[in-house]
Length: 99
Image 1 (cartoon, helix red, strand yellow):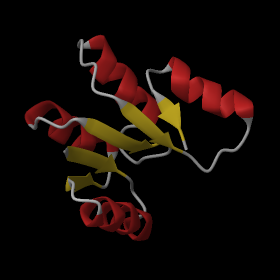
Image 2 (cartoon, rainbow, N blue to C red):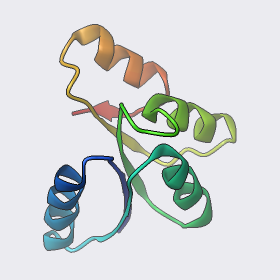
Image 3 (cartoon, helix red, strand yellow):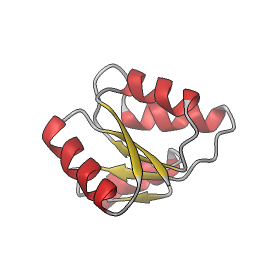
Image 4 (cartoon, rainbow, N blue to C red):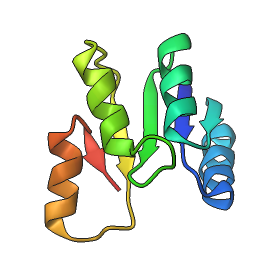
């Protein structure tokens, strides 16, 4: 499965990427929301793992833009924001799950 990870913290991005590769997946990484938007629209990925707080384009804005274009690729939202309200925002923006 081809997966796109959009995470600005390089250490976190590499950790997630390496774990997914060890599980047999092909992984692309973007380090900001605009790069994530480009890769999400130019490559055929089956899952996106998107951080909430990204430079250049916020993770929720990225998801909303892709959803408004009709893209239904599943999204796992990464967030250090632990409040239930923040998780609900991620889901309402088009995320399929929060982590």
